[in-house]
Image (tube, rainbow over all chains, first blue to last red; front, side, top):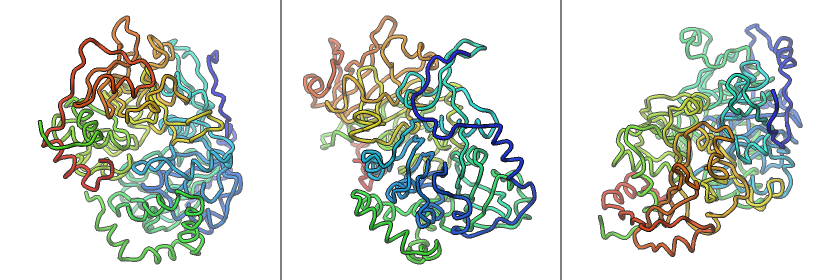
Length: 324
Length: 258
């Protein structure tokens, strides 16, 4: 198959699908092992300087914010990040922890562009930005989830998004049409927040699933945080609801309100004043640092963070949730 | 029709809302497209099926979503799935329209939401494609909604994030984009544009209708490239009293956008 065009973006994590199979053979236990642990233990055991890491969904929706804050407390640095991100990646960039980005979208949606992203990229702190579309990055994970080295798509063609990616264009040998080939994306670490999980990692998600199903299957290590830890009997009662089976999971963290100030479908709504506080603070580097001091560095754990937010505010968010 | 005063943004949302066809599927980008879609479902397109990239399809838009993944994007919805499912649905040809925003647009309807200046040393780093590139690639018809000024309507983009007609006639086909997909309209704060996209057309942007109170010269002055000006330019209807009431009281009472 002749390559017609190659993106000039850096291949931040060259995919090795054989090595990934081997990894899964050796390092992922098929036994039902208790993986329940704290945020501190999960981050210190599985996240390391320079690792290629991704979060799901994104900062204001079902995002593992308690784990994202713990990662900052532990100062894991030189991260190569696959993102789609809002608050969580903003906080990491503001803390100076991100070195390279496979970027789809980092912004604040209703509140506009991300000042943390602008400062990190325009100052050269982030040394490499490789461009993708949202579907493309999800399909890259899907390729890994399928155990194949690439997937063809009809997105990205003809644009600078393709030029500054590491995708390639070829002529399809069956039909002759041009397709964009997306390399499989294999994360060193993925962190995903779910509605409920058992101690072994069997996980359920309510509402939209974003790219959790693909990401959970496209990583060497997977840290799950869950609003609720349930018994395995409960999982076995509704096996059709298991979206992430235990053998994909390396750590399970109990994190009630783990997505705060973001939302969790049917459990609590987003904390608009809480989100606005970051929007305002992040307008300057100093403001962002003060925010990190106030909401990240000054607490030893997620429980202390929740005490700071307070029961009154948390109850209000539960009251304001989307209802079935 | 109404004598009530209205803002350019309110008018832009109303003109965009009127473009939604009832009984069709439409990918809704974050921001102004959400307000336009909500207004459409409350007026001319009650059976519109809104599609939000992270998994929501067919929501009842009772409250304005603040994010493309939040619970309001699948409120009383028909489907809550994931990004692959919905993007693959578009890739199979099921999504009729895409409504998008962007920082810059060129005469061929290409959009930039990635960088201002050189990519590797940008003057301004913008959010990136998000689902924009996918929507512009895969939906049958794409509508861009933009503020209208010379910094945004530019002859050449610093970065082509999302494909319009690319470099002109046949360029989409040559690039391999799905046949028959194309940009159809731009709704701005000054006017409604379409494209000279028919057989033998140039694929360049064309003025279709000015907003009430806006002259053709004003549109030309605020466009950084040569816009095709037809002999007859229509004038859009101003917002009706009901459209304004819906926008101000039901859709954006917190004034996040209007």
